[in-house]
Image: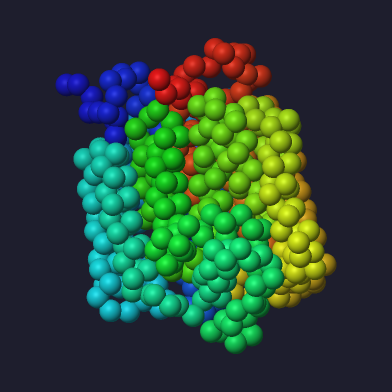
Length: 462
């Protein structure tokens, strides 16, 4: 009897190795489940269970990075077709249960909120059915349509939430339409005591302003960023199973909650994935532009700069051009209002009050010693950068290296909340999808030149 087709293998490949799932991909999936469920276990503040789960997830990401793309021994391990089907099926069952348990938002009301909840549950159920039927493209398509509809419904259900980030982006977008500097605008937040400064780089406001102009709400830009990111994750490898990873992004617990909050991390994710897509497609000019745009969003996005410079397929020169473009974009805003810019983009973030609502080890360490907490942050991120820069330079995956740095930063940072872990989960899923095609295996490890690595690049459009 002929062997059953591998989950989602719409192709005609028959090589046994292509029927299996790389261990790195499974570890990435397991890590994202830990982050998602840990993120969902919040009741005012995160407890020990949530901390343990994200700590386990970080260990799994580090393990995936050490097992990916042709390492000897354990690194070459592939999971059998049967075990792959069982594992992935269980993952989507867990995601379905998680959507039943961790659903909703904060300020949504009425029928639109109910519609949003129902659509998310239907998306999880449909994705599970498509995975069982070994149709990953159906899982992604259903997730895009249903979760996209759920996100729109939650915006309708929550038209004026008492959220400082949403109010900030709404106000600066309105001001940009009247040619006002984002750093000199003032508004009256509904939440007393919230800062009235613009606390990011200007790129996020500029990107979201067209959605405010067209729809009256910046959150439609956040929704689009999520949906495009899911599609790009599904294209991280030629293997159709990569599309399951895109579906997992949209089924991340409380995703509609993050849309309601207007957090800008989805902009970072989509820009990073566009950069990687452009590099794989050998559209290096677009890759430079995408990375430059990413660097104009949030301050901690600068952590990607050393990794991009170490990445052989992008390199120091292209990184330098991207940094120069980003600096040229930000400079006029800063020069027009230097003091508000410094206060908002730099000082505010440095002096941001540590909160026990953070999902990290910082508060446990700070209870012992503040110096210990900050020392662990510097040591952890520094170690992650040194290790991953070397690996990426030697041909390992840029996305996997970025995952390691992000999860390590989140684990030790003084403010790591839902949005930071959700961004890390998106990058981890992209790295896991990429591992399906062996992407990222470098010339130094395989002995092949860039020109010979046709199977590791996406074809150019005709």
